[in-house]
Image (cartoon, rainbow, N blue to C red; front, side, top):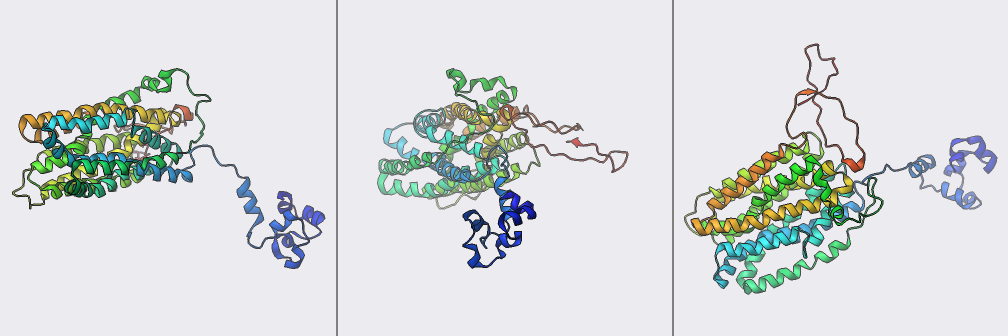
Length: 455
């Protein structure tokens, strides 16, 4: 078929007709006399045999497909995130009822959400069996648009919080905390079909056989990489404060004088900012204008400052007040926290390589679980000691600022003004290159110089 398109003389000898006739210009009644393969060529719906053949025969470059079934995995990860973190963020509305029913302090009831967070992220039973594989598999399906895809999946958190916060308050009023939790458990069963959509994908750089050593299977060898160790330490500190608003933002709003639906509105406002920021930051990170470690440190610091602002908001006059300052602070926190979330998972392939991204995702979640296990109980303890959540949000915001400062030790987290040359692309199993913006500064010799300086 390729010879027919490329060599008219060969085609006329083999077919007894010109290439133009074989391309579809012969009458319809003559096409029935041609062989089946040539009848396909003469199909009038085929605009160009040559372009079609070249398209079919052009080999696709190895690597993530950047689409296709990856969008189905992104949709599954969206639902997984909404039914796990989104539900957990709204669960704080039920903590006052639990404290009243069991006659427990805020510190004791905070262990409910803290243990749920730890079990979810530390590769234990429940949500962890779906969330970690969902995010890890999604990162393997995308390369050029990886952070955008992760951000799209993580918007399930905000969308779910926006819907579940008022719905959970309604269920608490109508059925009590027992009935509300039973209904939420039934909704969470929809995680099962989401896990069935995670189709495995083989990529260059994957190990030929699974590791036999249990320590290697867990990916503990990744800590030998200096960049990953720095990232792990910063992430563990940030985990100590990142999940406090998931548990205590609604009780903090109640302590500030808002009613039940006013507190739900505060949670929904944080969810709206969170969802929008994840998409925008995912698109921004994929443009490569700013290195991902630098964005990670920046938005991590802004998240810490947002928590400080939430803790310093004054109390409102009555339950009928909608708490404008607290709504604004919660929205600012949601924007910064939503921008930080996709970067945590988007930066991993650049640190450990695409072959180790699933193991690295599990390790990151395990490290954040340590903070998630200690942060909410510490926040509850400070609330019991001081009578409000102001000290809780100030201390947890300080944890996040400390972790963001450690992120500055990552490669390309700080700008450098020195001549650089484009580095060679490393093998896929060693880690992909993070996008580095090249800013051409005009030297004293004039604008025709080709010296590139990265700042």
